[in-house]
Image (cartoon, rainbow, N blue to C red; front, top):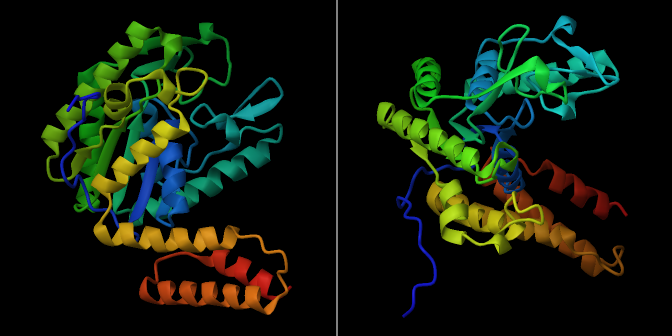
Amino acid sequence: MMKLFTTVEIPKKIMCLSHADRVLMFGSCFATEMGKRLEEAKFRCDVNPYGVLYNPFSIATAIREIAAGKRYEAGELFLHEGCWHSSMHHGSFSSPCREEVLESINSRLEAAQRNLKEADCLMLTWGSAYVYESKRDGRVVGNCHKLPEREFYRRRLQVEEIVKVYKALLEELLQTSPNLQLLFTVSPIRHVRDGLHENQLSKAVLLLAVEELQRLFPDNLCYFPAYELVLDELRDYRFFADDLVHPSQMAVEYVWQRFCEHCLSPEALKLMEQVEEIRKALQHKPFRPESEAYQGFIRQIVLKIEQLTEKYPYLVLENERELCRTRLNK
């Protein structure tokens, strides 16, 4: 039989994440995509509390700020093109109202601080080894917010300096949470603005840094090969979006399926199926919502929700429960 594609070998079970676990995720827009799917499957996730971050240094800074209980103040924001921005945060936090920006940033920080203390798993997705250092204070920014390039030094991080920063960070985290699971991925999204060769060098730096961290933290840290699955196993432009940079929805779905297979517990997979049944049932649009048949259908869904939440008290199905109440009252 002809072999038409190469298969990326993944250990049978990288980790066994369950719905009882609390997960904190940081990284590129690929991390946001995976996080959204975990949230839809009713995992307890806090996804990108700073918004999308691409480079390892900014992600490490974000985690340190959360661990330190930081709150942002007005003096840490800057005004550019009519909006107030934080150099550490994605543009989704920006606004013409400075107080609104501070409220948005600090409310997300407060939630992330609670979640980090209770976290069972930290998932980090690195996107690029290139960083922008402010010429004014030498700090690596998480987002340039379209400031002139002349205000920054652009450089590629070295493997050794990434490992040094993360070795210290992870040692501190594991001192307080020795059972914390650490899952690292490298984003398959190509940063073509850097140039294709430079993008390959950047990804190579990230992969080598993860490999060294795996060696240093073999009991806590594992690597999921999202980058290799898209670039080596799928390896075709039909698996990319129209921009030829981002993975297509088909590719994301494929990576998600492999993630579920190798990173989720058997019980989590079964529970996901039950949650999906409820979600699909609630998407059903009846011709006569007031009919006794449909009202009985909704009552059966309510019963399923009650049974699941009684068995799994950490499962959050309040939105689904509220939707059922609304439809029963019509």
